[in-house]
Length: 276
Image 1 (cartoon, rainbow, N blue to C red):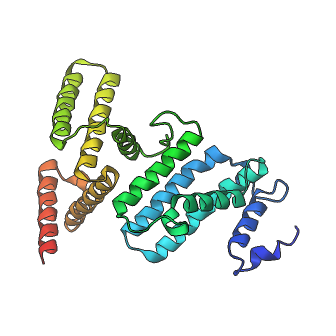
Image 2 (image 1 turned 90 degrees about the vertical axis):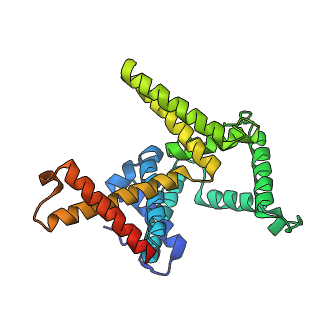
Image 3 (image 1 turned 180 degrees about the horizontal axis):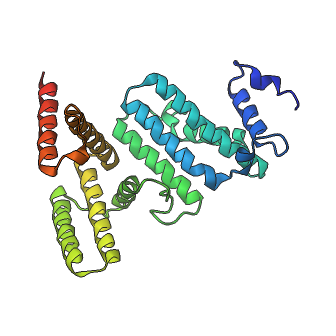
């Protein structure tokens, strides 16, 4: 076994060290068999997972964890870049140069001679205009062409709706969205009673899509709202488990009525704690 590159053992090696580690892991002769077998598609799920773990650390205000999770996410970028370099597609430096050029081009009020005396909303409009020009240069004629397929479904729904709204395809008032939500809910009930499982799933999807649109009209991020609801459910269900455990029991030893009462007790306690 040959000695590793001294850079790999240098704790002050920074970005160059991380890239050297990845090259060593992917070396076809001396690297890690698992790492050698990976490709863009097999690594992509880990990339998505690491991005969510970054968000979790931020939500928890756990800054030491955030440092670690950002490292894990950075590793994903280095991983994809190494695979691309091996295939002759592009390099890590190409990635850095591309995003740097993009940031400079999209911030003429910082790096150019455009005025800075604009509101944040106006800056967003300018940003969207630059992005529209970039899409046109890439010959993307459709309004929805570059909304990524791999986004979480709720997030992608909002992005699709925002993109369509820019060209006037949007309800003018929230009340219209509420009316549509009630219509879709009625159709879902009808589908449940009369249609196939596939048609029920379609109607359920329509209702979720409208709910995402309602969140957009209300200024609520549906993805963030659902994450918050998930956290609340987890917190309160754990309170049920803790209450039952004090009697030496688990949820399997209880029934819905008792657990519902414990849920309500947990909710009251949360509100009391928030008021103090």
